[in-house]
Every structure is written in C-alpha cells, then in structure tokens.
Amino acid sequence: MAKSLQNQLRTDMELAKNNPTVETLTFDLQKTLPLPRIPTNIVFYKRQLWVYNLGIHTGSKDEAHCNVWVEGEAGRGAQEVGSCLIKHITERLDDNVKFLILWSDSCGGQNRNIKLILMLKAMLNEHPSLDQINIKFLESGHSFLPNDTDFGKIECALKRQQRLYTPDDYIHVMKTCKKPIQCMCTG
Image 1 (cartoon, helix red, strand yellow):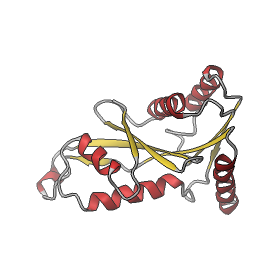
Image 2: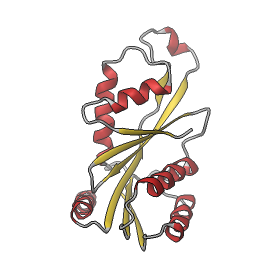
Image 3: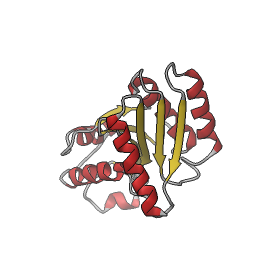
C-alpha cells in the first residue's frame, strides 16, 4: 500500500507540472529547532525556545516554501497548519488553478482532523478559481514527502552553522542552503 501511495504522489506531482489547472502541494512540519543554537553543554540544561517550520512544497514549480514561527507566538497544531496553508493558497496559488491536491503525513493533531477539513471547505468557497480540493495522506511510518528532502538540505546547511540566536538566523540559513528556499515569517 505504501508503494502505491508513493506512486500516486509522484503521478500527482507530474500532473501539476504538465497541467496548468492542477496544483499539488505537500506539507509537513520539520523537527523543532532550538533557539539559541550554540555548541555548549550548558544550554542542554536550560529551557530553550523552539522555532517551528511548516514546509510547503509546490509540485508545479518544484519549489519549497518555509513558514517559520517561534513557539511563543503560536503552537504547532491544526490551526497553525491551516493558517499557513490559507496564506500559501491565497498568496501563491495561480488564478487558473481549478483542482488542488494536498499531500501530508497522517499526523492527526496537525493534518488529519476536522479543523483542517473545515478550513479547506471555507477556502474552496472563497477562492475565485478553485473547483475541487483533494487531500491525501501517506501511510503512517512510510511517509517520505518532497518536504523531507527540503528539510534534509536545511539540516545540512545547519551543520555548518555553530551559532544561531534569532529566528531570522534560521531563515537566513534556509534561504541560502543548496536549493534556495523561500521563507515567510508567520508570527
């Protein structure tokens, strides 16, 4: 089943590249990033602030977009994921797109819940060109989304950084890694 879902994801990504009325988005939260990020053991025993990053990968353009915020501004639940998706769809979705396909992992608290479905229903009613939204979930434990590749590139770039003190430092790393990633601060 996991292989057939991965094949379906690949098919949807290709469909978005070849058909201007279709867009495929994948979205996922990266592991939490510590703030400050410093190479001493003292910080291990201190309470750190965490930076969150919701990655949204656009299938038609093969672009990564990061939505970055700090835990003091918001959590990492369904409302935050939904807010980032709304912002991405309203600001970045082409006006000729009629069919939107969303892919995610099966995390119930963030992606697979009634709040996200209701948000997508409202988005369908408000967006001028959208006729249909499909949301699909990969099998739990077998999910490998394009976002994971994007997060890997960010992690490689972070290994070369000894000290990061602000969310802007993380955003700078994301924007300057091997394949530049577009970032939006959503605080």
